[in-house]
Image 1 (cartoon, rainbow over the protein chains, first blue to last red):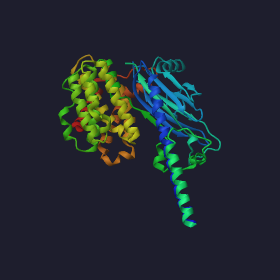
Image 2 (cartoon, helix red, strand yellow):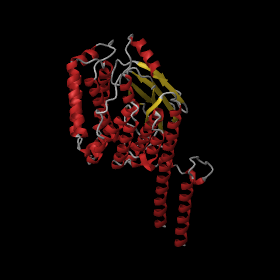
Image 3 (cartoon, rainbow over the protein chains, first blue to last red):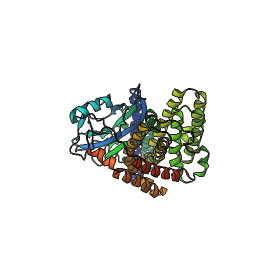
Image 4 (cartoon, rainbow over the protein chains, first blue to last red):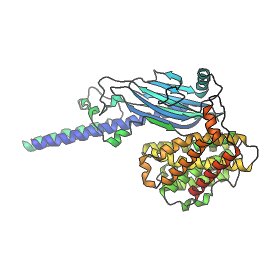
Length: 174
Length: 296
């Protein structure tokens, strides 16, 4: 009987591991499809690359930041895909990184879960120039993903329903 | 009885495994008892887990095609002697040199494509394909379909540009799937140095290139992220210290230029323009580093 139980336990672990790997593979495959979808929204801007930000919802709030360079005389479009989000998050775009106390919030939006949202650098520059009372253009922007706290989340061993990702695809006007 | 139970259990578990592996459509069937196992409680090892939890602070570097496009818009003209020798890829035997020159040739190819030098661009595509094989990215260029597409569209600049975008995307996907993202900074260090060198060459050899000069200064903004990427501990095995030191020296010298400090002290300054002496000094440092990279 002991042998049977050991065997059952071993197979049980194998099943759990296989299922987890399978879930994560499916999660990644979905992200590839969402990236393709986000890319189609770039037109007529030319694809320049993507940044996929993975995270796990935890019992406390988290902020993940992505720095993007903007060059003079070039217009950019950012395509955010939130179809791999089990919960909504807030996306904030700033002129400086999160350690700078005087940074300017250029745009903030939520309700991205299940959607693809576009942002253009022209809009960000306009807000920047208005808020800073300057004619200067943004040299870079900092995208902050504000990941809300989820009560009861497994902080150390996240479950699939706590895993999320935002696909960001960037394009520039040629 | 004992033997019977053993085989029953084995049969049950075997069936469970089979059903689990067949559930490939990703839809959870609530009525299927086998699927009621709370698989979400399973743990993964730390490396696997790290793949699904991005760093708190990350960055995106522009593609070689975007950089070449920006330089071209700034007035950079084509100088046939300025690019790297495409016949040298055999000389690059270390991982570091192969990755750096993969970046160098990518920048050269973008430069040639945007300047409608298709035959030259094709030579670089061949060398990029060769080096990709050396650095474990042969799958990006497998079946030679990219070369075939290039040949089929050699007279069509737009199609060749789209092909370059495809290469960029394939490379990105391949590196993501194979946990090679940390090496992107190495490729980019090569591409950045070559792009800057092409700018410096044009600035030195052609008069009235203020736009190119401004672009050289603007491209300096991404250097800190490249250095940060190179310092990823996963790049440690490549004897990368000299490269980081040289890039840090360029960054430190640039940050110390009077024009640079004045620019950052003035919130209304629209464009950073270096003095001739500052351009000369920066240009010499770039050229020295580029020589180190392209020499085998």
